[in-house]
Amino acid sequence: MSSAHLFSSVQELAAALAGGRLSSVELTQACLARIRSVEGRVRACNSFDEPGALAQARESDARRAAGRARGPLDGIPVGLKDVIAVQGQPLTCSSRMLANYVSPYDATVAAKLKAAGAILLGRLNLDEFAMGSSTENSAFGPTANPWDLTRVPGGSSGGAAAAVAAGELPLALGSDTGGSIRQPAALCGIVGLKPTYGLVSRYGLAAYASSLDQIGPMGRSVADVALLLGAIAGHDPRDSTSLRAEVPDYGAELAVRRGPWRLGVPREFFGAGLDPEVGAAVQSAIAFYRSRGCEIREVSLPLAAEYAIAVYYLIATAEASSNLARYDGVRYGHRSAAAKDAVDLYFQSRAEGFGEEVKRRIILGTHVLSSGYYDAYYLRAQKVRALIRQEFVRVFQDCDALLSPTSPTAAFRLGEKSADPLAMYLTDIYTISVNLAGLPALSVPCGFTSAGLPVGLQIIGQPFQEAGLLAVAAAYEQAHAWKDRHPSL
Ligand code: GLN
Image (cartoon, rainbow, N blue to C red; front, side, top):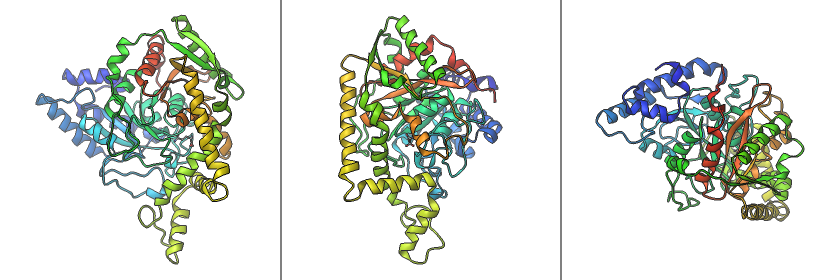
């Protein structure tokens, strides 16, 4: 397969496989060759299992030859963020704590992808335990943005976004607790979707903040993301928060949903802190929808704008402090060799195994849950979360979807914000409230800055309206050629 196919859509790849013009082994080898040629610069993969991937690819080719191909993902390589369990593969969460951990079981999404015939190729880098917005908080070192190797890819699913943008893989799964799929998708110029809370099973996802975490698809086009979403969505009895929602054929829905839509523009998401070039790109996307007959209405989300970050850092850290208690060197994870006694073993193992940002959050989360502070912080944050959710319900009474920037800036420089946690936290200002409200949202490329860095448009929808969101995004994508630009590397 020539390198010209590296940026092919999944539809094109599936058609080539179905037509016998390409084998899964050739496609997998092409991805491996691309990984080998760019990984020294991009550093998106924590590890990849070449023999395992080629064995899966041979099985796919054999199935197809026997007339038993399983559908459009059969034979297609998919990378997974290194927080999603695949049996027999490393599951590090980009943490020293799990540096030697191998998963004994498959996450539900991994099992579903295997059943669809996909090739699970590559464990993709992230901020340790998905805590961060730049992929710099990784025990394995940062990933670089393929558009400018001196810049961050965003985070925490930065490895997934960079690998897809760089043509290493056609598709990837990330996870999004406060923006970790959408923000890196925006900064790397790809499409990323955070599903409605409960649409995709979290079974086998290493938990960060369980009431906010969702696994979601990342790809180079809306149609590719629609296809991958359909493969992973659906009720799972092994996740008690999984909902019994109907899973439509998202790809087929794209063809029939044409709008026009009533689109809300939250005034507060265009204020101070928004980079003017990012703002201009998003405004021209809004103008496009208006030109296509959509009704554009200004709406207001004052609580989301004002309190989402504070509320998130109380709730997410509280849940993280509880979820990460299991990494104690006894049941799981790194075990210190220096411990003097049993209690010291816990202290030393956690001190050695966790990075700085993870420790900061465990300490904060433990504090906000502690007696005497619980009501003032955690309980109050839950109340404000309920108000933010209501604010969205109200706005959606007369809007089909909301439009905003995904991130206030394009990709920033490696090291630029790493010494300042608050500056880093502010990069999620437009994405975090969506997780607090449990809503679906995606980021789709909407242009480039004068420095050649991608800009993302965020589209937010009502619960389980993923098909509608994808259609709104596709209408924009089809009228623009952004997805045909690729980093030169
Ligand atoms: N950047 C946010 C954080 O650091 C969101 C991360 C995420 O969505 N996993 O918590």
